[in-house]
Image (cartoon, rainbow, N blue to C red):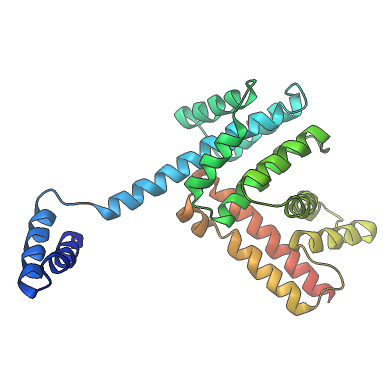
Length: 267
């Protein structure tokens, strides 16, 4: 049901005439506007959301290609990671082609990283949780071969800076993401609850939440709730995360929940 025309007509009619008759006239004109041409605000919001998702999708894979090329050439690890990432997202047909095209563009010399990041930030409307998710994905790309080359770290710092994050923010996030990858792998292994493996699992659980072993239960719970809110799949999709990437957010929340549960057992 459209009502925006009537509402705006009422407001502008009153502002122009300063009397009830002008307001009613404006409301009538607005009603005709609603019935005729109309202006679909809901459709505009949906279109805006789709534009943000498209921007997130294309920027993710183009910057992924740029990071992969940071060391001078794209290695088998980066190619395998990008391919596995597309498989994990279930990308097929046109979507997979778009991802591949974006990845190839990112590898080109002279890729305008700053311009793309500034444009991406505007499309995100400076939503920190959405930009953090983007940064987390790029960290995983850089760490695809198990090491972080200085050139890759430099690109990550550039990306973080363009998005408005400090060097300390990135370093903290790096530790959390790298620990998260180890935690996820360790959690799925048989025997992870024994001896050194268990001690390492617990240590990584603290890093996943970004807290210290000396942190109080209240501090740990606060960090847990904050991270769960930041990575809530439905909220992220509503803010601009492509629906195809929802599984990444789900996996992240599962790891956060598992880390929190493990820490609670130790306290």
